[in-house]
Length: 102
Image 1: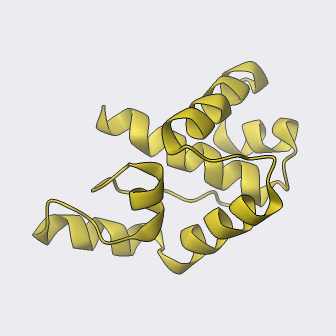
Image 2 (image 1 turned 45 degrees about the vertical axis):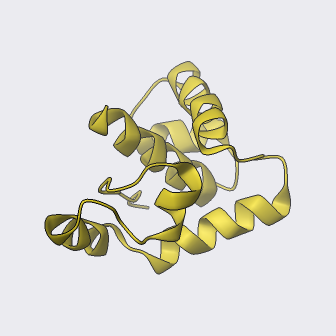
């Protein structure tokens, strides 16, 4: 379950970094575009995020940038629940996040 959560946050991060270009984002995530599209649908379902809404995309992008992956790992070492807003919004509490290298 934890691995799936990490994949979903990573998927969202790659997609946002690629400005919604699934081909480029899937290449950054090293997965087939169809796999990437499936994960992106799961992000929207699990996270209850409307990825077609510019405001929600902007909020997700800000939250991912304000809470870098390393900070998330440190906070989960001392606490069972994270205070990072994205994890709360996505219902992915206590999950280390990974970003996309560009």
